[in-house]
Image 1: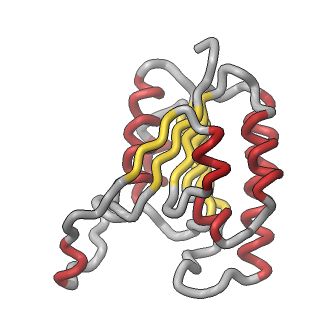
Image 2: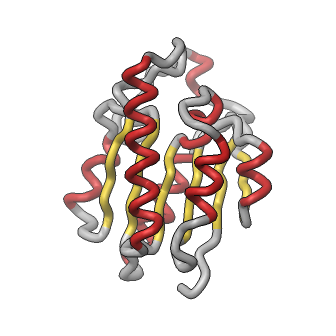
Length: 171
């Protein structure tokens, strides 16, 4: 790829991370190298097992659990900042064709790091690197720099009928 584009998957509907994982799998199967970093998340999600099946896929979490129902702690903020520093290196070294910044929008919503730093990080990447950003509440600044924005809209979801999250489907 000569030019990498910026994708944003946002909205209140299910499927943002799933879409990014699908694109990642497609890219790896096409011989591309993918880094999939997850802000906020630190739990044992099934996608962490992908690396056993897809050798050109690396997944790393930069969270300590999932605090989205509470305020982030100093440890949560430090984990996110550490993740952003790692993304800076990965986006600049050019070794990966696709870089997924999973839940970046939520990290920005909680102000875990400055928007300007994130925008600069993305804009200063190697030109061929494709960037995928996921998470609810995409800020206008993120939408503005994006080349593709998809909003997942919830129409109906079985969790309203008290269906618990299921391994391999929701996590």
